Length: 323
Image (tube, rainbow, N blue to C red; front, side):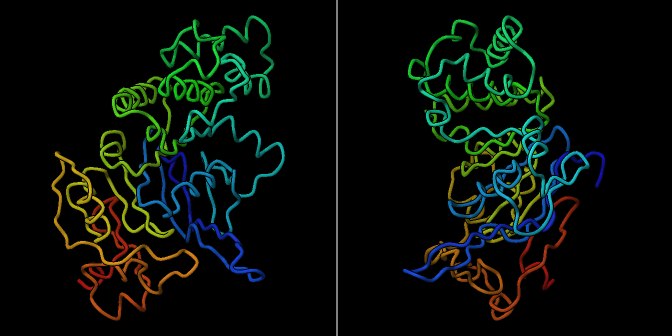
């Protein structure tokens, strides 16, 4: 592993056993053998439709789910199978900010109590030093000490998300996993939150894994992008290359579906059919039943390997393997 990388996933998979009918069980492949890496201080955007496996990846990275296969390396250390105290201590280095700030805060706790909780669990801070640290965190997220003893219902959505971020950075983590952190906010607040996240990253030297379906947000914040479809990464690379010169048919369709004034958007044929069930995955390339550019039996029968098109830019598509 390169010293420049903070996080690296190798062959990462997650299979859930679910009920299929009254007695039978079935295997749901939420994540299937993906590889990605995030440089220290970088921001990787993970994009795709709902059900593509993005949030499962977030929970694997933070230790909320255990991988079924593969490995996760963080800061040169294998964190795939941590248990007990070691797993709990991982929270000092990797923190997660969830999609819904309303559900992330206990309505019965003051803002002070919510932010102080991880400090009480993981540090010896108490009394005046604890209060001083919470006040410092509120200043970092541009709220201030006047919010110390307010309750969540007294705050706007954007303010609540800032409280969640203050709590997440309380232990000076190296990395934040941001799972749709702006989707529950008003459009007028989203731009402010993005600028805040950019400045926070610079100020605290944070590394981000940013999960979103909002491509305009990803283009603005992320320096690398990975595109997921049915548990697989179909294309990954520098943000400018992915947005300006997408190479996978799914990436082309995804970008064409959203107005992006700065992007050189392709105009592919519309997708046919619905996204397949993850309980009944198609063989070969998983996108082939809906792909407007499939090239016959090879797409149906063979799983495409990742092909390097340029430094850091990889695509899993038979179109590029046939060249």
